[in-house]
Length: 163
Image (cartoon, rainbow, N blue to C red):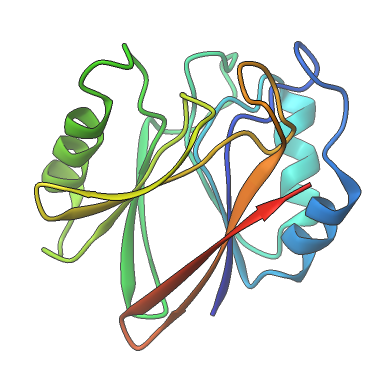
């Protein structure tokens, strides 16, 4: 299963469009995970139109757009716990790992979060954490990034994609 992992679009407050090559990757994925900060109902609708299937959460900059703060989804035998990661940079990894522990059914669940606009693929207290950066390169990101993941039989491989 091919998964596009994205976050922090910030359209229209910081950026105006999703880079074309990322639009194609989102449309070609089997499933899209968005870790919040769409910034508008229009940005959410655009991702919904592109994505064949979508798991998404609200970020701290999102208006009331009807998304949960935490969502879980199982894809290719891998459980993902998705949250925005809102709060101070200090304690970010601990905060996201705690959300995974609280909401996961599996001890091998993977945490997906955004908020910092910084790429991350690390393990914190035994929990793998992913942050795709900013899909549009919205500040403070230095470039537009996303993660392309492949999940199969409980195994997960992740590749960074840059615009």
